[in-house]
Amino acid sequence: MKAQQSTAQAITPQLRQWIIDQATAGYRPEDVLKSMQDAGWQEDVAIQAMETTLQAHLSGQANPAQAALTVAQEAVPLAVPVPDANLNDSALYLDAGDRQVHVLSVMKHPRILVLGNMLSDDECEALIEAAKPRLARSLTVSTKTGGEEVNADRTSNGMFFPRGDNEVVKRLEARIAKLFDWPLENGEGLQVLHYRPGAEYKPHYDYFDPKEPGTRSILQRGGQRVATVLVYLSEPEKGGGTTFPDVNLEVAPKRGNAVFFSYDKAHPSTKSLHGGAPVIAGEKWIATKWLREREFV
Image (tube, rainbow, N blue to C red; front, side, top):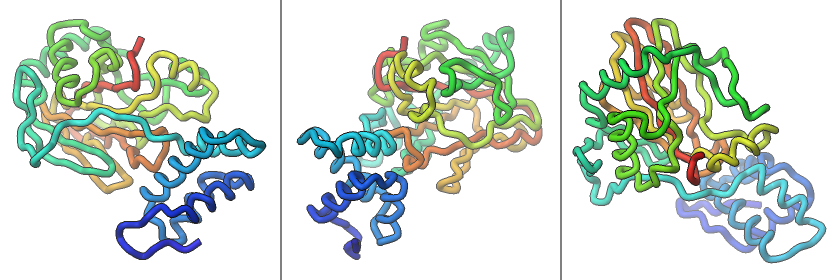
């Protein structure tokens, strides 16, 4: 298999047949993807070719190879619709309903938007004060059990506001739904986190690993997570940025600003690996909103 050398690589019938042959022969999707990249195929083209080819093949026929193809399809999940902002004509401002949000930075792949004026100083302070009495050691969702667990990679304190818990939460949820054209009911509760000096959250993915035994029960509450909105409620003196290691990006924790990123499949190819860098001096408060495929219950 040899890739075309043009910048616009075409998914040919020969390539599709080769992908089917590899899947039916039992090769792992990760190995097939690596072979394509080694041959010169661009990663996004290779992933698209695998997704569309296997989906079409599965829907078009049932034969002894279907089990192998299903395994391959699950290993590299198909892309799903994700939230996004309307950035036609390189908009500098976005309508959030009750305020104008500033477009500060845009990245296409991975889809990362840095936005200003998501919350006012008063709104940030109100969320912090409402969260303080309810803080506890931050937990993470356990995809092994479907429950929650203490994670050594996450050294913050946190809490959750249920949807619509108070007026500031309601306003922020409405802005997010408006900005990213995503149903309000598809959002999880709003999580507020507090990081003291030395606290961090090591790089991780927000989607739920399909290979883990507890993921099935987690997905029953609203499907996969497809996007994250992180809002900075305070500014540490030093450190505490949001890092995206795959693209060497760090977003500074500026109060009232937000960073949005989406991931259309539960797979590292989305380049949505991210983390909270250690706070060096001062304290960091953030609010995080995860958006699901369907209504979150």
